[in-house]
Image 1 (cartoon, helix red, strand yellow):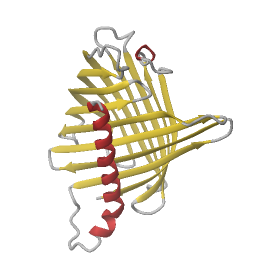
Image 2: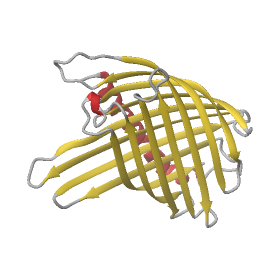
Image 3: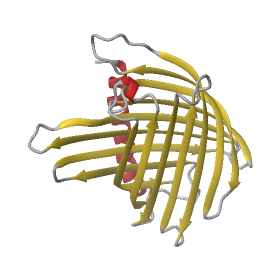
Image 4: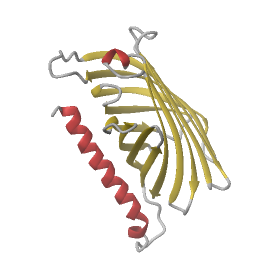
Length: 267
């Protein structure tokens, strides 16, 4: 078993633990004394997607995250795992999705109009033929809208990326190390006094040496409907485009999904 696959299982377990912890966090905190707001924020998500007919497909996701906020610094981390199977007519089911990701972020002066940040990311993807991809770098974020019922910001950063592709046992494993730029746009709008929240996050990451040939684009949009103060129903649509996925042996450069999820948050 390769290190990327072992890391995916470990991160899946971490995400599951975080989600379970979040689910019980409100009950655990109910008996605490004092009205001081905790500097910690915990979030969890469990979702599924189901298709049927000539081609049966099932998929699920699990995400967990935590964030600690102080006067000058916000430190956060999250981990996620997605798994899916498909079957055509009466054929045997096969795995068509198995991916994991883990992220760490450190933001300095998060309430300022412009603030610097540090990011570290690790991921693996069966469907995009990535055994292990590590990236880290520095950047800055500009906030167009701060606080209230909305958020609008743009982040630019420079990254160093190392990709270990998934290959067959008889193929050479060519590890790629390169510099990549990153542009992230985020928008959030809270409506009906927080009862409905719209989120949009998009990334564009071109390789600095060959930006027109090697780049990734990721767009995720979601609507979350509040069921209680801490639990919500979420509909999310995500599409990841990797210009070199087919060159690594993937079926398509696109990797899209639609999920229905239950979310939980505690602070």
